[in-house]
Length: 305
Image 1 (cartoon, rainbow, N blue to C red):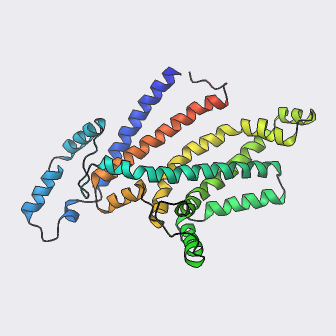
Image 2 (cartoon, helix red, strand yellow):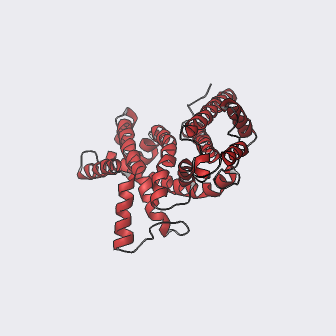
Image 3 (spheres, rainbow, N blue to C red):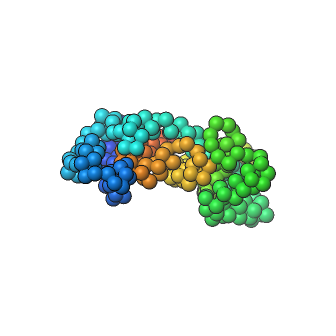
């Protein structure tokens, strides 16, 4: 296990360096931030002074080396737009995104897995067709369209929920519904498929022959043995939820890191975009490491040599 963790730590370091490098390159392809920070009639002296202050007058390779050195020290630089440390802005906004992604994940697990188990238990019935049809619809509808339709119905027409913001549970309802809908559908379909595969095993037929109750059989034997692909899917979809939060946070004015990154891209705020990209990648890698460790809890037969 220790050797596995060392290998994963090395792989994580390589991945984070790669992500940091891509963030450094791609954000600079958006253009020169100085042209946005200064008025159009700014003098050449003012432009040169600001470029020197931001460190953009140095060769790109020098900027890159300093950038990596700063990341190792935990310093992502100061935001060009807000003139405060970029990491402080990330820390201030991250709890909002964590709340949105966390509640959406829990909602997807609470609804998606039971829907999949029910569909597998009643395979070929009207319930199976209804649940899988609903899942297909949820996967097909774009998040931005669903968000706008929910806003028109529950905020504009009925007046039940606020259109955006953060602070109350009412403001959380529609963003969670939009962000979790795709994962609920995906989990339902994956759970159904995994459960059907387990239901065809010999030990399930033996359990039925011995008179084991269907509910106990589903929960104790079928679902437990189908959890590995389900947990793998949840771990992989965490990154999708963070990326999907860009649309959700924008529609509902949710003050999270996705909107922060979008603002940074619009204003060509290099440090701001870089801290969001690198930290999001670090979180995604950590989640997948926890998923790998959780495999052993579910199935002790799994060993990491």
